[in-house]
Image 1: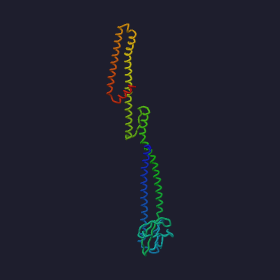
Image 2: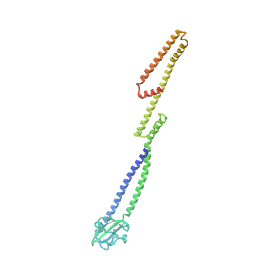
Image 3: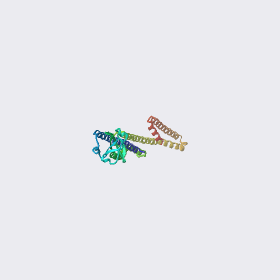
Image 4: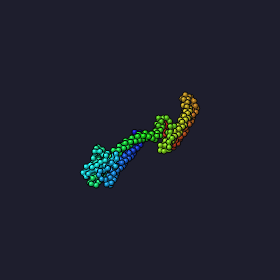
Length: 309
């Protein structure tokens, strides 16, 4: 897995987790707030109706609404009167509802939040409200949040990929330049970076500076090798002359040495002189070689390797 892909996945995962947490918290808080508003509403309606001191016949439609139902029951829970939107259905009167608590119940397969308040004559007013509309709105909200999270993940993944590509691109340029140098395309390769002087910018600048130093050192070493080759060529030329004189004198001694003693003395003198000349040249080469040992280790090793070649 490349760094680019890891960065894109990291950003996508981070944004996804953040959106899921925010969306879940928003949904839970909104759901709790809306259902708490329903509970307060049924409690307030029951309390208001009970404080109005109603007497039979009860006019319950004044307090009702399309999703709010009222019913007056006796102590046993038998209905006495009900709002018009309730129809033949009966609202249950449980013990928690008798105490004024808001409970959730299902009537005719429909969820209701209801509570009760006592009335004169051992009767109770039951106020119920259906949260179906709120549940539908919450389902729409959940669906919308899901779409938003999925769209945000897709957008974050694409933007994260582009961002990671922009971040990793200079590093890929460094790798490409190093590969080109490795494949023998020369030390003139450079990383083309035009971004800010951040960590990646400093990496590119350091790599370019290193290539520039290597190129300068390589040129200096190449020039040194050229001078060394010229020096060796001059040495070979200088050594060839006395060797030729010595060899020619030896050939002449072999031919006329026995017939001309004076020529033998002159030939031996020439051989001795040329031999002394060669000895002086070899001594100078040894002195130069010993002096070269004081140079930098890397340069001395490279020069020695090239001399042996």
